[in-house]
Amino acid sequence: MESLGPVPVGGTATVGNSQCVLSPGSATVKGVGTSVTLSLTIDFTNLFAGGPAGRATNVYGVYMQEQSVSTAVGWQEAGNWIVTFAFSPISVSPSAGSGYTQVFTFTMAGVFPEDQVWLSFSTSTALGTLQFYDHGCALMLGPGASWIFLYSDLASSFTGMDGTLGTGPALQNSQCTVDVAHSSAVFSGSTLTLTLPITFTDAFLGQKNIYEFGPGTGMPDGAPYTPVGTFTVTAPPPNAPGH
Image 1 (tube, helix red, strand yellow):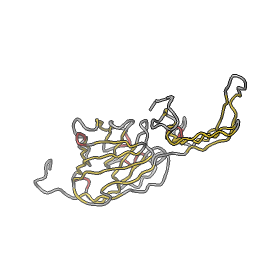
Image 2: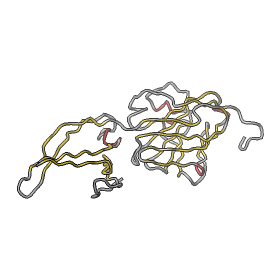
Image 3: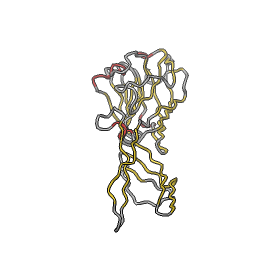
Image 4: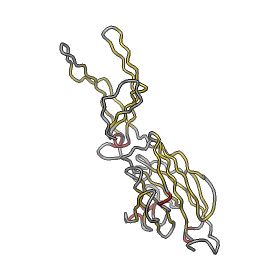
């Protein structure tokens, strides 16, 4: 994300680092006498919200500095700002359905390249723990938009299989198989759209809740576990591939 400029005010380029992204295209600068008013849109990243601990929301001081040959003034505190997590789950498509195989499209907002996001098909009630992901179809994406990880049956052991979206063999555990070669992740600003073809096994029959998690949500941050959809896994026909 490092792009430190300079860039012109009113231009289309953005400038940012791992803490924030500035949008000069929407900025305005107005001067009256010796006073200048700058309006600038700033998107803070989830990394900056979490701070060193990676969890707690942080309060930052806001400082301004004026520099000139004759009237240089040091940094002056002008206020403070509470940086909250930008991540927000949006949707999964289809949000309801049934079958043993399906192409799912997940959409999440407030995702930055350095973030990790999680997806889970689960019936677990072990909310706020790693055990929530056990014996489910639980995936992690990132950092970046190409690396994907499928947790093993015992997800709390931090074991599983990883791959690169768009290439390579499928990832599988006892609950599901993910066709990585035909999967994709696309960023539009900080909105992530992730497409995954998933086939479920006979060991995973029944209705499953579908969850999207990111920085500041899920385990261990304790945000409400609200599913974005449900999917009922049914037995495949006798002649289905792989069965």
